[in-house]
Length: 127
View 1 (cartoon, rainbow, N blue to C red):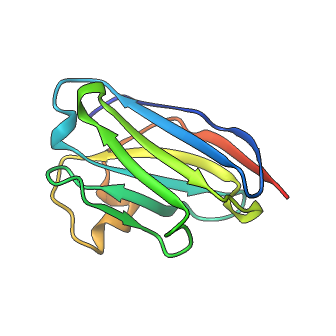
View 2: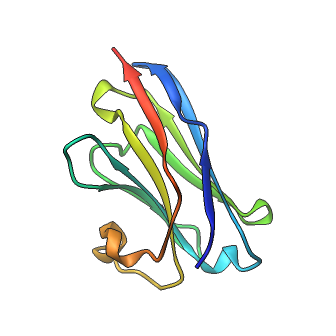
């Protein structure tokens, strides 16, 4: 398993922007599908975005598509989530996750598909 460390969370105004980062340990980062999930109080952990291990193809939840951008820098072992035009309903603890598997369009959205998780970073959107 990989050790993942998120950073960049905090308080942001609705309509602003915020960038989350997640840095992974080890030398095989490029071989991992990376994902971002979030969990609000009293709710299940939900899929936000993913980026594939080979082509770097992104995928997004409908609720964030067009506003959030996921990217990765394999040289820095880091995946990013650029949050543009955040809304109060985006407030949650955001988690970075890693999977060594080739995932389908269905399985990329399932927390159980990922073997490694970060500790989470709080994002609060004021509106």
